[in-house]
Length: 460
Image (cartoon, rainbow, N blue to C red; front, side):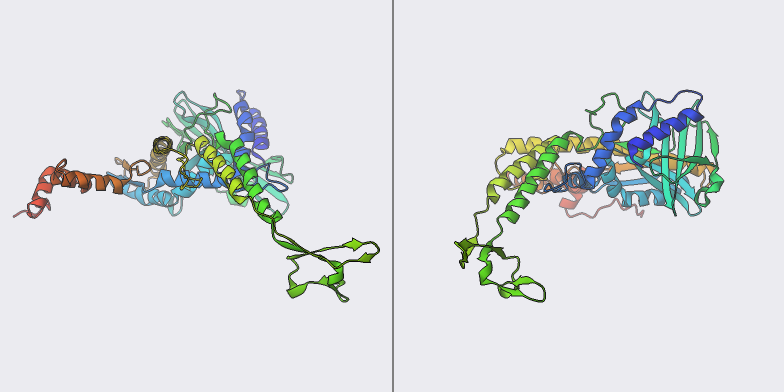
């Protein structure tokens, strides 16, 4: 079911089951854009029809930003037996993190939702088009939301709505199940035990002394130009929709230029032999693609004629236009010049290139902060369920993060510069070792003096 239609259906269900009216108007405003970002990511934007092709910019943009955000990310849980229990499950999340961050960047948000299985802790990754936040607190934390799960069996469509609500420090989780034969409606509500896949779930669960939903909510920290009052995230290419459309059109013009200017030979039908079995002309060497038959006439008698069609291709001028449009897309998506466009293009000055890298770094840094907050909340959610099911003793959990900053800082160039400073006496070897080898001043001096490192901890 389309996201916008699901918003309408969920609104009706919530108002039926709630004492207080539920207003999802802000989601109604955003739903069409979430659907648009989704189809753009899949290369099926509304303008991709006829001769207009997709050059898959939304997928490339999301992939590149996710790569920059998660590049060389190091994170772990330490501090107690509880932390050691959670660590392997958290590590699995990190192993597939880049892929899911890409989905989150494309659609604006992503939810990390842990749950308990017979094998321990598992994490469900809920993308923006399956997540329906109902309310937020003043700090932007989700306090009421709906998760959807849907599958088709034979001619019936089964839908589960899981509502998570925090009110007065009490967490309430309710499950509603619907069955329908029409993909555009939820259909008839049935008991959860009616569906084998979900009959192990409870219709309602309550937990006291809970101040936050047990989820990690990641949203792209960009200004929402669609609805400035909306608390949900927007796609990393939300400001570049029109620019991407033009880029697709220019990309298609280049493709058509090659197709339309393909070399051909116009040949009179009188020069060809017709195959009686297939009732088609036979072309020299079987080169059907090369020849185009024409009926040349001179008076009442056919005149044998051959004409070569091989016009010049305007690829360079069209490519320049496409490349300039890619720079527009890069600017709108806070990407450094050369990320999508030709990196060998020298139209931009060194200062402009530096500024574009800093712009990209700022955006990536903001997304890393948002992702770190979501992962920290995920750890807390894992800790919550571990306590509920008594899977490990209570204990402190310290989560560390180390992010890469090589977008702006070129480590190799910086190292070469420091080596030159050492050679001219502007930097000491001790300072060099402390900076690049992570050594203390004492250890650096020992290394340079040829003395063994005595920090191994061995006692005489």
